[in-house]
Length: 79
Image (cartoon, rainbow, N blue to C red; front, side, top):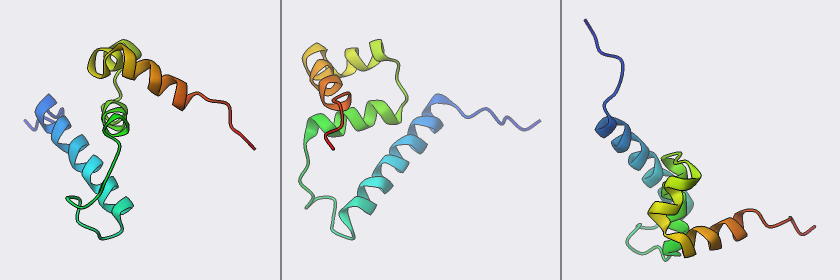
């Protein structure tokens, strides 16, 4: 019988691989070792990639970064 339910480890590998691919696309062929980025945004991208609940995001990011990210993500658009 074939098990079609991937393990948590397999899911994590797929999510992290997809995350890397998105960064490679954004880097437009530049080495990811040469890409400068905001670590807070990288962490926020990761928790979003794992589709963590708000309370889980707060645990991973810490209360201050979580609040700062909420302020950034939910700012009204400026048109």
